[in-house]
Length: 134
Image: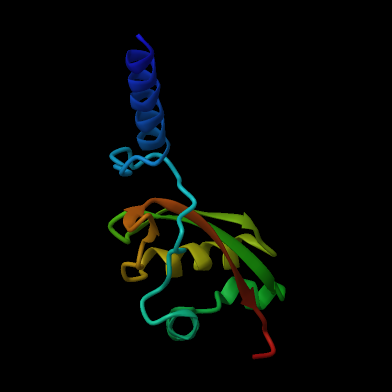
């Protein structure tokens, strides 16, 4: 009887250890995970800055009204690297906010975040500075 109890406890301990560290399978793209490795623009931060500076067009209306400042863009990097749910969290004006969304909408695929080696969907926020002096 003792042997059976010890065997059952050993099996229970083994199943609990396995249950705490399962192989992650993320099938639900609507969930946002914080990965072990954060999502990144292909080529890194410098390549992201270059892409933004090459594609951003300061809106004429924003120039006319003197709108400048930092736009905070929140977006989702999906498991396949595509961007979605691009929204402006804070902006110095609607014209530059719309331009920020346009630029993020045309970005190439990112390297997705990963968790335990598996790609996961994540949400990021990026500050984009608009300045009339540059």
